[in-house]
Length: 95
Image (cartoon, rainbow, N blue to C red; front, side):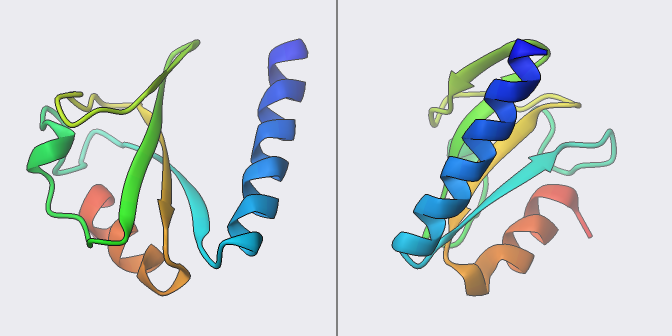
């Protein structure tokens, strides 16, 4: 219950911050069909105004780095301009 409350509070704070800086935080869970599984973040061709901020893997959350390798089921928190959100989702989900 404590973890769920902390996650909810974190989402609310990210939404507020996104409104202040004219950007959007999106959360994406990587399915087994994602083309970026097994890829280092630095190798993914994301738009310039986009940053993978954190990765939650199971119960662990860590700051994403260029050398972080993505795995199936990873929950990514991404900050991007609002107009790029759909493009980012297509890149990470393969749709």
